[in-house]
Image 1 (cartoon, rainbow, N blue to C red):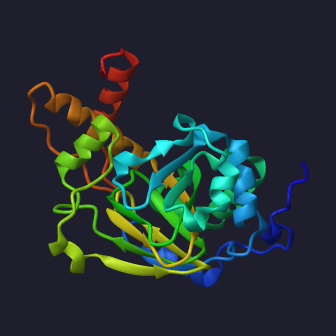
Image 2: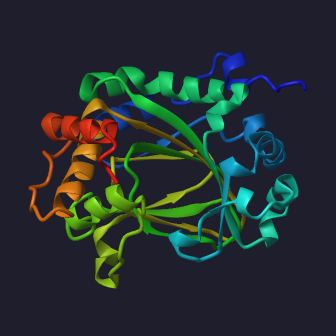
Length: 291
């Protein structure tokens, strides 16, 4: 199979120019910021190329969710075998959200991921340390699909490739994200959050079109709404040593609470450390006591 060479790499073009890098540096790690990127016309990110890539990834790495359904409705295509390529090519009429996970398994997409990560690594490392667990996701959505209020346990840059979407970002703190919700996520893996219409004016809403990229911080609650045409987005996520420690500390807190204790929340990021609790949780897992 002939692979399409990443156009911006062949031409020596960078995913983010110096203006975008300056915006990221001013916001990272706690703020949200809008940047411009050069990936919107990349041949590997077209709908046809992604349909072919999904077939190579296999149904276990392709997720789907009907229209405005809850996060609990997200399922792997492996649970309902389908012609992945045809489903993606008909996304305009499918009323679906489709997500690819572990896209970096495919070498040509790993090259894109590496280029995007390398273009920001010198800005990330001095602030939060070397980026850990770098991963790539693709999101393909039918018109007017809404992804409900939720939080993800990574730092994130979302690059809009095609179509338009509204992306609302909220601070990773109460009332939007509470200690109890953090513990629930790390106990169950469910990252959906309760929504209150009274919060509507308290978030920052970003209108994203092709060529726009949004950075939002670790666990920042957000909702996403697609405009009147299909949308393609590339999401790049990473962790820091401190954020991985905090995730494990929340898991340890949840484990303690189930046993009648009332632990205090972990130290706040980006610089707070939770080493003792993280190490305790890692020891519990090694000993098989996490269940």
